[in-house]
Image 1: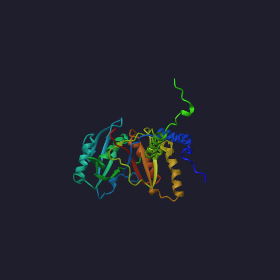
Image 2: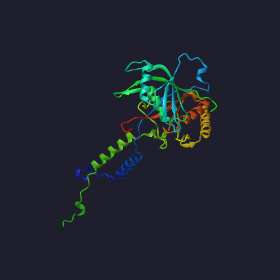
Image 3: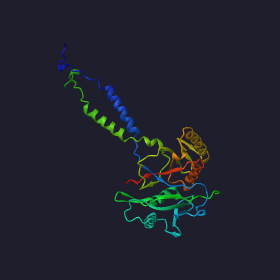
Image 4: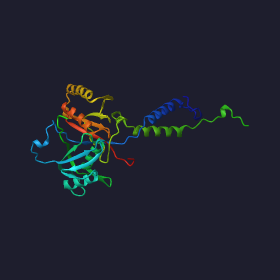
Length: 158
Length: 146
């Protein structure tokens, strides 16, 4: 039996492996993109175009109107008939008070909020309003306020 | 000048370099985000502090992107409102053929923050007329950079 001496150790040819490794590395570096995580909001959409005032709602929703100017910027928020300007913090504070869920809620209120955004209002303001109604974050924790958010039904002929 | 003969040339020690390369590859492999396929550079999502990635992703998601001008992007192609409705109609036939109920399908709307709410609602109404029921509005999570 022939024994391999220590000095006769086979040298591995590393070149193909290094080639592949660098190719993989360049692929990953080139395709790498920092993407901020995304999340979803659920908003209920009523079917059809019938205005909700037609039926008697057991839980009367809180109606929030978002009024926009001609360039799509938010000019005013109306909670019911009360105007609160264009401040989402104020909207959140008012919803927090109306939801009656305490200072640090763990469960969302059963309250229903109906959003009535102007058609020309920029979508980012609508999302800001949904955020203000949905809850708030404090010290890295998220507290829910209202889950039942829906849009108003638009009249059919526009 | 001392001339180094070929035989005297020492082989480079490749070990640290290979270690580092593998480390970098594993880092990029772990961090790579394949969900980018759903995203489009032309759509700048609105930012929200409450937008957290969902714990249970929807079973049958259908991603519709809405551009600033109100046009929609579906499956990588840009459509006007009417074209998008026609395209979604073929999707409905597909779901029916696959025996998937439309109420199990979640429409995920990735709308540009600068587009008008009316455009988004137009698309929702078109989807509703096709009997889609579940909608989700996507927003980008607020980070320190925003």
